[in-house]
Picture 1 (cartoon, rainbow, N blue to C red):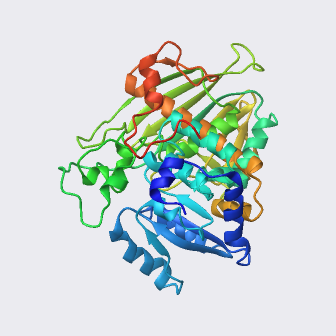
Picture 2: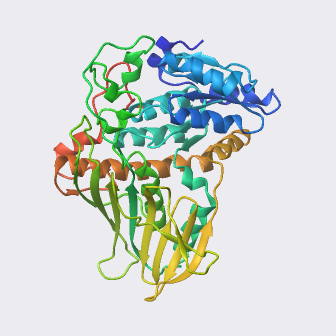
Picture 3: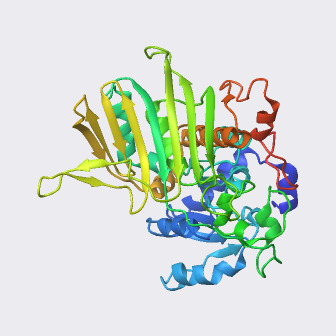
Amino acid sequence: MLTRRNFIASGAFSVGALLCGTHRAWAGANNRVRIAVVGIHGMGQSHLKAYQALPDTEVAALCDIDENLFPEVIEKHFTKANRAKPKTYTDIRKLLEDKEIDAISVVTPNHWHTLASIWGIQAGKHVSVEKPCCHNIFEGSKLVEASKKYRVLVQDGAEQRSNPCSQTMAKFLQDGGLGEVYMAKGTCYKWRKPIGHFEDEPVPKGVHYDLWLGPAPQRPFNQNRFHYNWHWNWDYGCGDMGNQGVHEMDIARWGLGVTLPTKICAMGGHVMFGDDQETPNVLHAMFEFPNPAGGGDKKRFLQFEVRPWITNNEIQVKEPVKDGSGGYMATSSGNSIGNLFYGSKGYMAKTVNAWQAFMGEKREPGDSGKGEANHYGVFVDAIRDPKPETFNKSIEEGFYSCALIHLGNIAYRLGRNLEFDPATMRFPHDEEANRMLTREYRAPFIVPEKI
């Protein structure tokens, strides 16, 4: 039997045990897939609701370090819906001992994403992990390594990868629809109100704070480093480029057809508000990639920009309206979130569910595409017919996109331009930057060097 103590000591199981345990749990129950949602505050409830809407899928367990969340979530999503109550856990290690669970959906703060996923993989559970899949580049490389070693499915949280809109966008660009695509831009213009200031305080009753901290350094409890606002603290989050922006970063990299950059620069700051936020709310990051098949200097560029407040809608997808005057579809009210691609034949604008090319000097409307899919359904369908070698390319692609986020944040925090070697995933002759590729882990919550 797997216990929390020998789980940490052993670190892994045999592949045969993984296959046997994973298959038996659902195949004998009329193909019913049993999911555990790990982290049920905020986005975790979106995962829960999405899985419950799928046929032959059961949210069989919830795991969260805040026991105060369980009654309301269970009442809302289970009792009122006449569904069986799920099991509840506060410690993911205990959850992973449950042989009836086929898969886990990791919706914790960022600093837990990789460790929770690797533990789940080693326990024989299929894993879907929210974006960003890692809190630093070392973690992401270990997660990819685990996904290749163990015979389970690992899904990255870049939901737009599942959308027909994004897939047709990528094909159009790869087929030369815009000619030579020399630059992509991702925008994250999203309203973010100040978070204010809170003093440290005693840990609230029902909160298992040591488990919440996990791999992060020991610090006193503070409301501004807890539910949601952890995003704006370096110990737990990655700022808005790693929060909302990771989706647009992934699309920009995909459309541009690149993996890791050779040069990075970033400039920004935390402006307007004198609050507890550590991460920048204005950020301009630039990445340079080699382009052997391109013209001129044989380079490609990716720009990324974060804004927190009043701004223009830069990402516009033109759509006809009834009076023939033309109109625009913004990404969402008050926000401008999406991508632009620039090529030798024209440019493209893309939102979550639509893209439009504009061709030639007159920028006349060209090809377009649209359509959304169910990211959660893709994961569950894959569990019923698992092909890890194919499916787990998702997490490797997710890692490359997350690596750009971390590289941009490192350049911002160091305040200087950086050179990067994609082959070694190191900064040549720059140990200060190399130290930021990983972190010191608080025992026993250690992302393992050896998978």
